[in-house]
Image 1: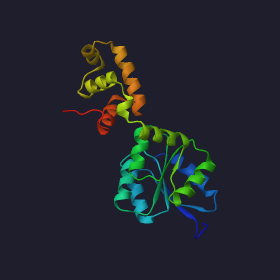
Image 2: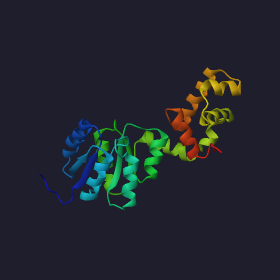
Image 3: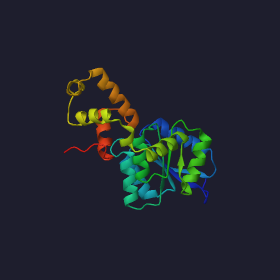
Image 4: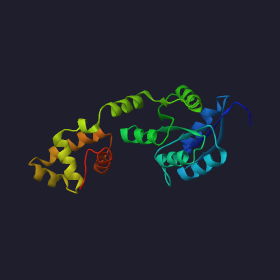
Length: 214
């Protein structure tokens, strides 16, 4: 094994073995990188980071046992020196914002070109924020446009009724609109909130104080 004192020490935390192996092979091509370990879930990853204290952790978000955000919060609470670069397939607003708030230094998508990944690892090791352009755009839009302004009054009415347990049919009946129209409103709401289902939409709306359930 090559021991370079200036090498950036990296751990890979992802629940897909093929992804871990692929990243290992890719990173090994760079003389200033040293992959010192990998883990398949957040809890094992936490133990690894605690033990090895690498410079950079490459981290997926959706993992068993402890997810990426939970791991980020654990790293922050212990003030471990490891900086985290999220590498995931998920680019909705909720995931991005939660990861950044929990302490991620960077956020890349798994379709990122290898040279860009290498640059991001080096930047993360220096403490510089690296975001995939699409992620940066979504983050800026999220910050600049409060979601409450994005949702129309009708969309907020629909979501309020969904939040109190009404089905699409019941929402339509109460608002005197068709079930199909309710579904259309929900699809627009999902797009604006960056989520994929009604439970997540309600959760995000409550977090952002768009809704308040008595």
